Image 1 (cartoon, rainbow, N blue to C red):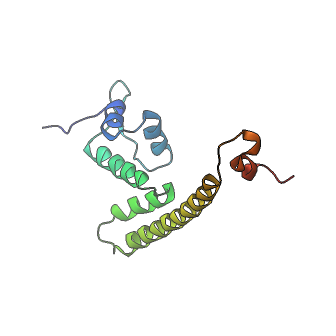
Image 2 (image 1 turned 30 degrees about the horizontal axis):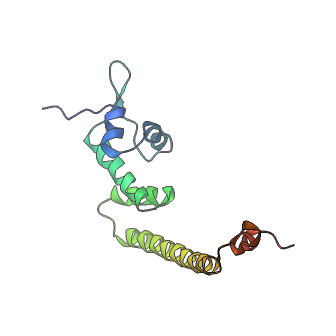
Length: 135
């Protein structure tokens, strides 16, 4: 029984990825070039689908393209130690923690600005004043 063949549109739809993104991933080497049909259309198989799903899930979790490339390289060599995978995940988790801290600080600033807001006119608005350059 021949393996299931997917068009680029079917592959994109199955992974909620834009066709242009699939082509981009091929150009930068994250996705292997698919074989071509007699009519010169791209013909993707289950391995392409699995790889693109891996890339999408990694990107959805916020991993950078360089991190995804490294994870794919590690995943392609199953005999390797998973220390590299752990290091990439820890590095990314630390980046997420920094972003959360930055967002929490931003939230505190916004809370202060909003708490100073009182009914009145824009001319007397503390939020506008806080956002405006110092006179």
